[in-house]
Amino acid sequence: MVRFNLRRRIQRRFSTLRRCFRFAWRKILARSSPSSSSSLSSSPLPASAAPAAAAASGKRCRYRMLPYAEAAPTAEPAEYGVPSAGAAEPASRIAAAARRGGEGDPDLVALKIGLLGDQQIGKTSFVVKYVGDEKEEINSCPETKGLNLMDKTLLVNGARISYTIWEVEGDGRPDDHVPIACKDCVAILFMFDLTSRCTLNSVISWYQQARRWNQTAIPIIVGTKFDDFIQLPIDLQWTIASQARAYAKALNATLFFSSATYNINVNKIFKFITAKLFDLPWTVERNLTIGEPIIDF
View: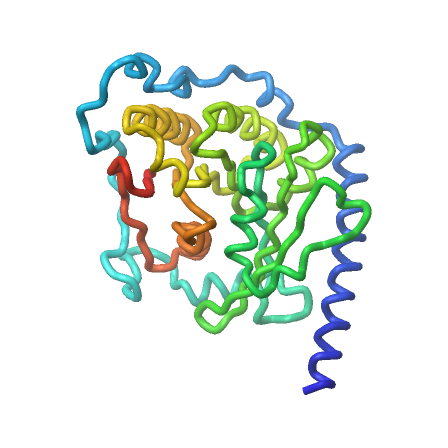
């Protein structure tokens, strides 16, 4: 047992050093390579991204259920464990990804997830709630100041999936960190505080910065501190929820309301990412009821 623990410690230290080296190398490449998508940052925000509840903010809310937005029907599996028709075999997808990103381990799928958002909105608490006992994996390399890195490994269909989560602290100087945090990500979480509308407004600028460096990652909007949000007046809850839904629709993103304190939708968000990446037969239920943690897509 002592020998196994020593070996694991050595592997972790080696992994940390290797990550620092890759971080420095990617930072050099990010600064030296011209952005081929600079036009995205200057593109105007779609009109549908304007707050949908602006006109309703001065009216009294008489509804308990948000209306469903019209969307094209998508084929989803009915039950967990039964693949949907036409979907690729989940096990084969995971095996293929393992061969591409395992770094010497044929059963390891190494994936990167980015977290963006303003300061003091609960990003670190959110990640620590998900990472759990592996929170000591925070990278303390000096060159990563302004970034928090945490690892989470899980077992899916016999393959080990390792998520490296890159959190940008949001200190008002994200230009040096957003390119590194977003490049090669399979998913990016755009986070805001449900009790602070200014942090919700910032989601648009975070999205525009991220898309300059990554146009393929799965976009997810996450509202934090749901336990505090439900203490707000029902009219204000309606307004914030409607605005968040309008942003999610404009950015073609999935919306989750969450709480790290009570572990509301934290694990579900990462399970959603995993199912989306590998076409796993798992579906998330839509919830648009005010007073409950909203999920919209």
